[in-house]
Each structure stands twice: as structure tokens, then as C-alpha cells.
Length: 271
Ligand SMILES: [Zn+2]
Image (cartoon, rainbow, N blue to C red; front, side):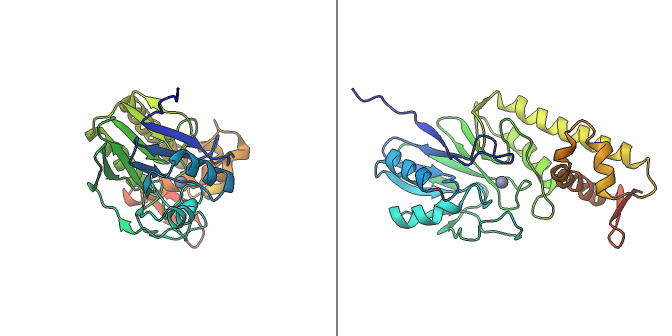
């Protein structure tokens, strides 16, 4: 007897690394009318696996954002399966982007993808990336969060495509939705989503207060020096990555008119 499959299948790509944890999660939703979310990197074995699991029933491909570990397989799979790609266009190019992703349908906040089996609601969540979307599978009460919320690692916010201000607002936005489970772009499913959302917001705001209190100790300081005290709880080997998040906090504080940035000297100071 054939085992019945989960309504939402999580398939992890073999691209594990410091940035991707155990690898990028692709999701297949549905029974006979399948939606593929985040096909992942262009790795032949992964693409083949998705095609096999899809059993010819994949009818559309959705992408949460265009980072290179999430969307590059979309173009290939879209052509092979002759199905439309959906997501948002790249807004600000940086070295992290997949420029091959061209959606046939651009999704906006609140857009619904309706099938006979289920409805997917699009939630616009800029922050980690300016073109980031989360997808709520309404009947299942599962939110696919891409890199907006990951399990097991802290989300990188890299200025200027990433924005800490947007990120915090987009986290708060999720409180308006009812769901029981998070399907993250990396790591396992997460239960108790509101506790997860609140924890991330608290954690970021704690870090922000630490940025302010450490910055006050200097007249003016570079990110490279400031990171050592703000992230003294993090392995110094990770400081080059922590600088991205530090600067995302600092640019938010510039926007809040609490911090000044001297672009000639690349230094920060409290107002
Ligand atoms: Zn990403």
C-alpha cells in the first residue's frame, strides 16, 4: 500500500553551509494540484528530486525572495514543467541576488493563489530582502516564512537591500494572522509561532539597545571597532557577518534620528 504523503512536504536542498544551515527548504503543497515554493539553488540532484516528488502535478512555482539559495532553480523548473513563476522582481541588486528569476506573475501583498484544494495568501515582508514574501496556506494554518524567520540561525539583514526597520515592521505584521506552524526557509518546522515572532522582536530590540549603549562610549567609531563590543557574545570569527546586522541596526537608528553617520570617515556617533 502506498503511504499517503504530507499535505505540505519539506524537501531540503544539499547546500548546507554557515549561511544556509542544513540547506534551503523547498516546499510542495497539495495532493493533486501542487504548488512548489522556493525551488532552491540550481543543483541537479535537488531539481530531479523535486520533479520526482511532483509526479507531474506541479502547476506553479512560488519564490519567497531572490537570494541565490532560494530561487535559481525556478527558471529551469519553470521551463521543464511549463508552469508559471510567481514572486517579486529584484529591487536592489547586491552580490546575494539571483538575476535569472523573472516572475510571470508579480505578487503583491494580499494576493491569493486559489486552487480547489487550498488557498495561499501572499504577505509582503520586506526586511531580510526588499522583495521578500511569506505565504500563508490558509486551510492548513501554516506560514511559509522563507528567510523572514529561520530555525536555528539568526536572519542576516544586509543594508541596503535589507532593512532592520522594515524587518521589525514585517515581523509585527505577522501577528495579524492566525497560524499554528511556521515552515522556515532553513531548519525544521516551528510550533508556537507568536512566541517565536515575539522572541525575535525582543532579541533585535535588545541588540539595538546594546548598540546605543556601546556607541555612547565612543566619540565616533567605525563598524569594525564597534562590532567587537556590541557582539562580544558572538565568536569573533563571525564578526565580519555580524557587521552586516550591526550596520542594519545603525542605519535604522540614523532613520530614527538617534545616530549620525559620517560617510567620509565611515564612522558612527550618537546624536
Ligand atoms: Zn535570503
